[in-house]
Image (spheres, rainbow, N blue to C red):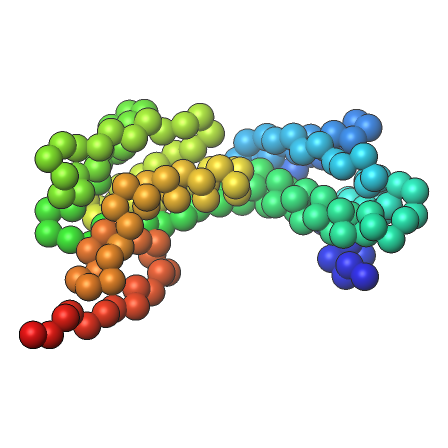
Length: 177
């Protein structure tokens, strides 16, 4: 039995939620978003909280109710507080610089990598070796951070590359003669 589905989603002040059939629209200070519910899930609003339930009452739908509740919680948190991922560049000469709608990365290749910043995402570079990805869509923020990391993932021998700020790189010992 899903325990997540039993907890209601509280709507903070400053966020407007509109339920129109299977579509939930949320608008807040950080942006707006829409989430379409699964056909087997029903949502209702009471006292500034969203409650989720199964449409027909079968046990197979209970896991989908928990999933839709979690995705709606992410939507409301995104439009009220926003999400961010921090990346660090480790290596001699590795630099990042945000210029307009592109992120320029110097990662030890013969050329600089120009990454176009998608709509709904803002990228800040507080220093030359730090990149902060911000946005209201949790999935999109994680995807952009993952794409930036994939240009030069950290390697286990020297620890060079692009890594998440909270990521721990397990180091390997070099081969001995």
